[in-house]
Image (cartoon, rainbow, N blue to C red):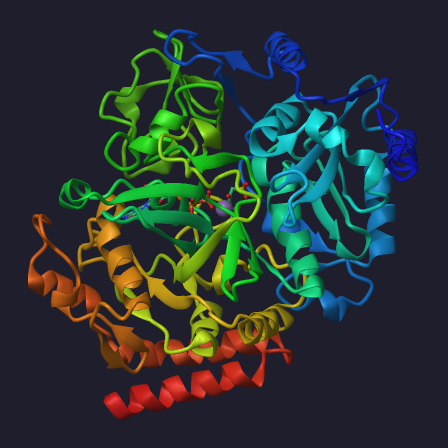
Length: 596
Ligand code: GTP
Ligand code: SPV
Ligand code: MN
């Protein structure tokens, strides 16, 4: 398929290791895709859903032990352990190639190896980078065809790229969780993943390449790869301003990225456009601003909680050309269902494990009775989204006015605050904390530090990563302003105080107004916080001024408690935490103590 000898030699070597019966190149043609879908339906990998209600949609169930990213089995394999840092798991590259080589050996015997050439970013643009994933899984092929720009358009440029591509190898092998490994070799542009069939572990263009490897390349080459959505707010005068937002997994990126403004805003002519919902690659533009592209081509979104009210745009996007993973199969009309879609669970249904599901035993408070896995997902084409940005395919990307950090915090963090400088904003990102979610294997609801929502995704030392943020700031003549939000503050009974979803537009509006000095705020020890009257609450029902005041309250005591925890965290990151950030931390502590 190509005359590029680097590529051909590598594929040959990997085929000698894994010994597939056939090798098939993925060209992305309609015919080939259709044939693969049919084959997957025949062998039970996919179930074809109702073609009238959900055209070209399929259902897939993963193995029960394979439902989320596995951070404890994810490794960064640099020659020096210190370069992977304390936060990442590390393995010596040679030892890792040896160990995984044994697992890969013969793993594709009797099977087909698919060669997926793909581009992260618009093919040929300054931002774009090419990867090739070798996999034994048709599910991976069909997902990659949605999530990336894959196939012939990439094959056409392979002759000219030399060895400038990311080499990905994936095999499901036995799906043995004790031998599951997601390994990255940033010094070799290589990713090896074995014994999983789940999303972020196996769609190697996504977290493995576009974040872990790309963050490593970005540091080397002077750009950034971030776990961020990108959205545009169109003003009544037709002008559009763009923001990025970094929230940890399952903390609201897809929802914010596709936000529908409250009616009063819509009537005035505000619109929101989605450029991306998970990953942003950022570069300094010729105009001295920071520009962003979404390197992906689709959404791998959380299904539970997606409904006509919370995220109608996402729901509309899933109505065709979608692969659903680990949701409920409604047998009566051959469609899908998940918790939070509506109040009518299907009566005749199969749960995510493949068992008959009794909706009468479903208890909203008990996850073990759920029909859909809490981390069940939809893989959908970005272009099918009703609010996809007209700039989605623009190779130049979009200029960024504001960067927003955020997490799930029941208490400490207020609804929104603004940092006082790029350095202070980098500090705000570095101390992000959030309650863990079902997107990764392990306990749910535990507060952990998740700097810039990148804790699981930085491909090198976290201290060096903070330094890269500071260095980037010095190279952006006109940098975005940096903010922090928290949609998840709860009352004493554990209910969310802020209505969230579309209403988040009110907070985004304050943020964008701040970028133009059009909104007021109060300087507090943590940064600029709006006064209650600075948030536009026109048409917002059921939220009193007192509630807004409570949402914006800076609780000095709980912040002071946090300081110790942050110091501990910085110690865990190690001795590469930049002195500037320690200074910021000391400054914050002093200001909080003075305010007490
Ligand atoms: P990943 O794809 O894992 O990176 O997740 P994400 O950050 O895109 O999260 P997503 O938008 O899918 O939201 C995850 C969960 O958070 C869903 O259950 C949503 O219903 C919930 N959520 C999103 N936005 C809000 C909000 O504004 N308020 C509240 N209370 N919940 C929200
Ligand atoms: C996340 O966990 O942040 C996701 C899903 O976006 S996955 O692709 O599994 O990483
Ligand atoms: Mn994500």
